[in-house]
Image (tube, rainbow, N blue to C red; front, side):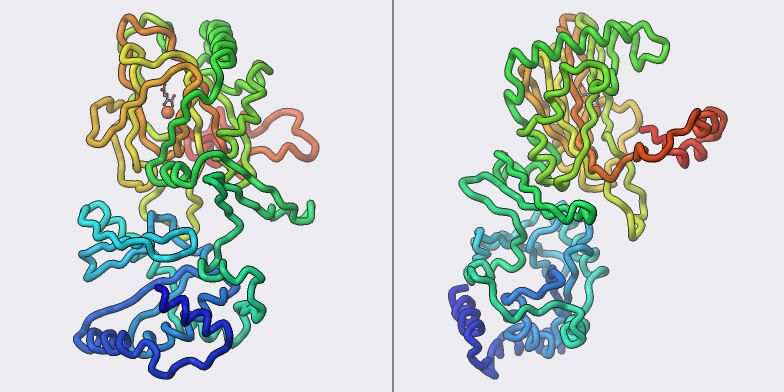
Length: 443
Ligand SMILES: O=C(O)CCC(=O)C(=O)O
Ligand SMILES: [Fe+2]
């Protein structure tokens, strides 16, 4: 790596390239390819070439490509939504993951023999390969000036080695992202999102699909909100439209419209900042509650995910349903009330298909218990359930704070409102597909 750094620094000063650069490696490639082997790589790039990428192309890729390596590129916006890391995959059988420090220096190589990791790496490779293009196309884009090739180097030469680092900064484990909002009308303003979740915690949420936050609300706040939830539950329980199992449990929807005591949760920064860092800066908030009445046994929510909408096969322009749901517990959740069970990583693949009503233990499940004010953020695609309560259970109240990308809205609220909703009537009489086309979605 240090040698590479030297070469890069020479390159930046405009030193001529040694004609025999990378010769040994190129011989290795030629031999393998001549013996019928395949060598290839896919490199993620942006539309502006970084100085480091220019260096890699001129110093290595041009030589490797000529020797027979399938050097390929993928634009960042085309990166498939699969789990990937910087990985070498040998003969479709051996996975080696590479890890780097913040400056982009190699920290270690890790051979991973887990069959699940192999499956993941193969999927990532095939998806990346399918959406990538060869070096020859990249060179032709550079020639035809379809790609920006800045001649002036960034003022802080040091950061060049990390490639397109984006605007995410990490100082003392505080992650700060400066977003430019793609808002033409407002002149493309900037918005900085700062979160106290550490980079490791953010990565864990993305990878495993959950992140526990203890004491997200202080005790006084959680007690106040618990009372407000109970009051609404009692007021709604007798209504015919109530979403309840009478005497056992009830969902209360649209809380922000029902009691202003919930409004401070709109700006619950520790959770909001995590959601904005991961989903993008523009989200809207939906708040609901669920309550189990005390003293009831066998009250449980079977295995489910909140957004089980990934079709098979995957259409090219499918919109992945990323939302973050923050479950805030307002009571003690012990064995009596029943743990929350999660299946870590189950938000990533569409291949978990548990039958309706399934309450069985699953390999790898994680059980969580809570104190009032504790929370867990989950990816909305994560599979979870609750363990059945016992007869000595206390109340089990939780808030479901949903962070939804802002563009995902049924109603823009603009123009002259309709006097009466014709579509509501149509939906009442229409079949399931008509209702779906009118915006109804049941899960
Ligand atoms: O009660 C819980 O702990 C979780 C409830 C849940 O998963 C839900 O209502 O969607
Ligand atoms: Fe749920």
